Length: 246
Image (cartoon, rainbow, N blue to C red):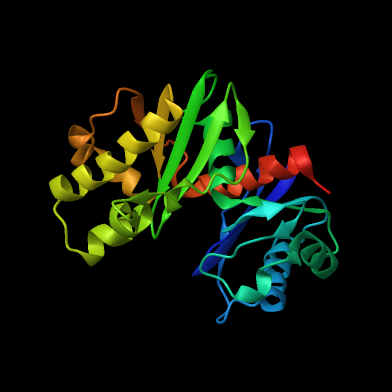
């Protein structure tokens, strides 16, 4: 099945058609700048421009940076507050003229990794953490997704984890890999005590530099870098649409 996968981010919106049976992107990804302010209608129109770029007619899967329930956006990290409480799937369906499914962006990345990446064929509890501006999470049990697990907002010593252990925090505080690695390890240890995952997959751009900080991780679970990298959000959004399209 071919689905157009689109990953909505605070700075850019990117997409590509995907073969959901193989996880292959069928054309080079196309990226447009996220409108500022990132209100619903301008963002929906940007999604439509990406669909038009590929002359797309068919299902569209979208990864969105927030919590969603039945296509309604309940939070909107790094986007305009006008998204909150909006039936985003309905809006984008009307704007593009295509069937649309929207899922959390970290969930999308997790679906891609579980289908075609580091989590392929893995049973038990698998936790994916995307490390970037914040900390996105996706949690699976025997391949089944628990949607909207916003565990980047867990508190460590009274502070949200992503404010001290994200890649943005590393850059902001000008931390060495060792100092940041120990901070991030504290977060992973807290997650382990709560969920006891069999496997932890670390994604986001920083995963390409995993050799710099893996030596400072002390969790009992197996830890692997993500394989899908920057394509995970697009591919996972397409997989989500294939399963859950409205």
